Length: 163
Image (cartoon, rainbow, N blue to C red):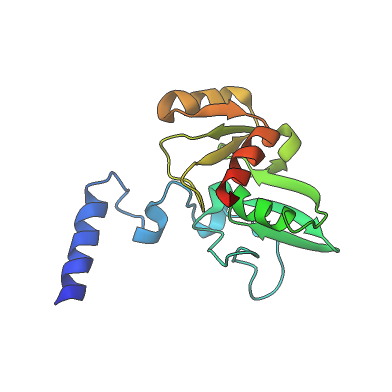
């Protein structure tokens, strides 16, 4: 009985939140993309999951980060998990982030992050979404709020999660 009520409540909430009818409940998150749109960079049977927390990288694709470590490609669900790994003193090469507009990986050096928008964050209460183009970041900011900053600023915000 309780499971049935919980499922009915979830369906009612999802149907009223503007989620597209063709999307499953898991895809209803802003961070989600379809499997065909996600680029998974890791190898092996766990390639779909964040190397730090195990979250589904397709479900949290728009906040994905990636880097090379000891000759292996690693993919993270968020800047939070990337920062957690960096906090252990590891050296990561070629750090990248998904551009929300194109869904392609870009260098973190080229990214404009919108931090603190009304769109839900991944692994943090403070959202952090990246864009390759400053104008795209401004459009997103106009719709959802937040502050535009470069990687160093977004990383500083991510570090606050660990205080």
